[in-house]
Length: 266
Ligand code: CO8
Image (tube, rainbow, N blue to C red):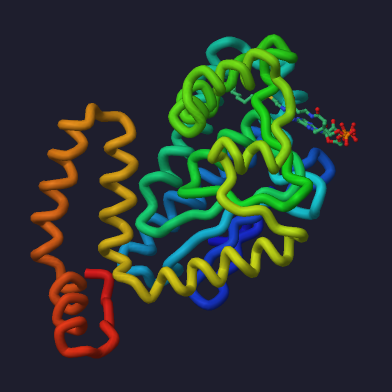
């Protein structure tokens, strides 16, 4: 199903692009956006087990001005505490879905990635930004706190104390600073250039073993919540299990035979 009102989904050369498409509200995350994203991500996860849809994903925002300017503030003005909690949980479920997909996801941030926008970007595998990209968790300016994972993931990404400084002030973090603190991995002149580079990266990466990338993603995400010794245990188990994969047999055999490997993702 690709009939969404607030999202666009296109696949070209085995790379899917999800575009949040509410430019009049700077792509703010209404309940409808999160519900549609939830349906799309679940369907993608279900149908892409054998990589028949895509081997990589990009998340971006329609037009140039905003990636996602946050949760929809107008929609929140009439919410009860109960409704707000379930809205937060729906958004959080979507961040966990991005982390559980079997393909890498690059957030391509054009313009504003504030509040919920910054939170969605942080749940992707990594973030590219245009030179106009702006990050921040401005919730406290509205009497709110981050609710789609921002109190947790920003600390993990940039360190707790820096995350506190950014969150308490609600200030904008420009793209240069975002790169310095490790939030953004690369800066591009234009949105088109950024999307092209993301597609090129994902295409090159696709020549590596999809199964190994999936396992690296899973172990790295799991390790984020564990102690070093628990994390090393997860790594050792996965390292052992990967020796039963076709991709591992093919990759090592191809090296010895001095030829290019042909990976199946199994
Ligand atoms: N929600 C709803 N509408 C928005 C949002 C938003 N977050 N951001 C922008 N818009 C709308 C504006 O209302 C405006 O609509 P209209 O033309 O109908 O008045 C349109 O988009 C264009 O915006 P502006 O005219 O304000 O554009 P500017 O270029 O002047 O300013 C800014 C751009 C600086 C991005 C400004 O729009 C802004 O400050 N937006 C709000 C940013 C923000 O505070 N985001 C955080 C929201 S809270 C949040 O994300 C919490 C996440 C966890 C939720 C947990 C669930 C309970």
